[in-house]
Amino acid sequence: MKNLRAVLLLFLANTISAIAQGISMIAVPWYFALNEEMGNFALIFLCTTFISIFWGPYGGTLIDRYNRKNIFLGLSVVTGALLFGISGLGFWQGDLSSLWVGAVFMITFLNYNLHFPAVYAFAQEIVAQKYYGKISSYLEIQHQITTITAGALAAILLEGTMNGEINFFGFVFQTDWRVAPWKIYEIFLMDASTYVLAFGIIMLIQYDSLVERKKETGSLFSQFKVGWDYLKKEQGIMIFGVASFSVFVCMLLSHFYLFPSYVKNRLVESGDVYAAGDMYYAIGAVFAGLAIRRLFSKLSIPWSIILMTFLGTVVFFVLGFSKSLAVYYGMMLILGITNAGVRIQRVTYLLEKVPNQVYGRTGSIFFLTNIFFRIVFLSLFALPFFTTGDNVIYGMYIFSGFLLISGIILIGYRKTF
Image (cartoon, rainbow, N blue to C red; front, top):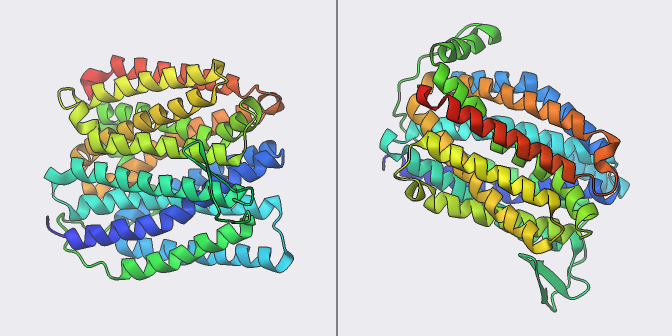
């Protein structure tokens, strides 16, 4: 494979920073759940989503307009510096307020909004088309292995091992290894440090572009309109791109908002259980990365996504009426398979269908529809009703219905894909 060294270095940089990011993004929602501040977290998540309305489209134009390697370097510098500053404030004051903890979530989330589309666009640029399916799978596997690692470390750092126990995949092991629970600003310092390592690795990347990219000019609006005009002519791709995002919308909001409340209030469990659930999700996603293309080799990509969307419908419905910890872990495993499986198939389809020159901008349009659904659901879930007792289960039922409707839409328009 041409540019193999560049691909490996990109994977290495992603792995190092993703582990620490994963720990932070587990620690932050649990911090708010533990302090009975999920309503405040909903507002922070909602503000982040509103900012994404402007940041997402702008990020898409950056991805198509500038060198993607330079984008990764810039993200490492800016995000790392901000996290170093917030962590330093925590060490200075001996604590961090909810506002600063929420700021780390916002910074990391906005980083994701640019980083992941840039990774896929960069992969499309430096990898031959025949490898698109494999590279999508490998990126998913790499991402989820780091999630497993992050979940294992988060379980230790959030709860510590001073009682002589470690929760690993939901199983409690006795240990003589004593680790006190980390302060949240100590976790943020570790996160910030990995951006320095990632910057150094990305600097080593050298590659030959396999696609011809012309220099883009014009205003942000005119650049964004290029992507919109393309999708107006390719309505099948537009409908597919929007409807196939539904599993990701439900997973994202559940992971960061519903599941912390579900674990604490419905299952009446601790932070290590929340982290262990994340690990089961990642195991399912790794399985998807390894096997999903073989599993659905005799089906078209749209049909495979339709089936996994309906499977997601079942997952959220079961979580709604169950109180079993074992069922929770099982559903997280299946959710990992469905979300990662849909993402692999979806990305493969779009890499094959959408020209590299407009890939970032079409992604921005899909991203805006994703944001619309996030705003609707977050505005709903911010109501005190959903944080009272175990009423979080009604959020599960709502997502189950949403996925059912999305699956029906995908079936109805499948011939246009």
